[in-house]
Length: 74
Image 1 (cartoon, rainbow, N blue to C red):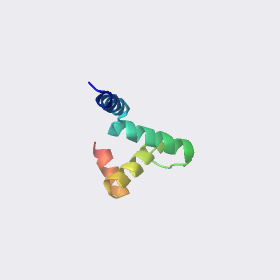
Image 2: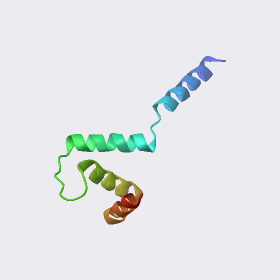
Image 3: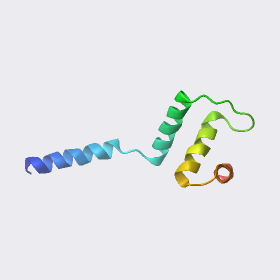
Image 4: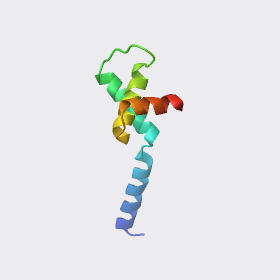
């Protein structure tokens, strides 16, 4: 195996180890938002579920209302 092939293999292995799942990405995003944005909620949703609704609605190009309903049904 030549040096170029070894480097490419190592880079591929690194990317595989660093790959984030959708769940990990969502959790990291919510943690980041919760750390940097303070909100008060009223009603049945806590901050984490509110951010989950907002992030999921934005990423799926859906409405907040529809996303909240879908998550409630799950």
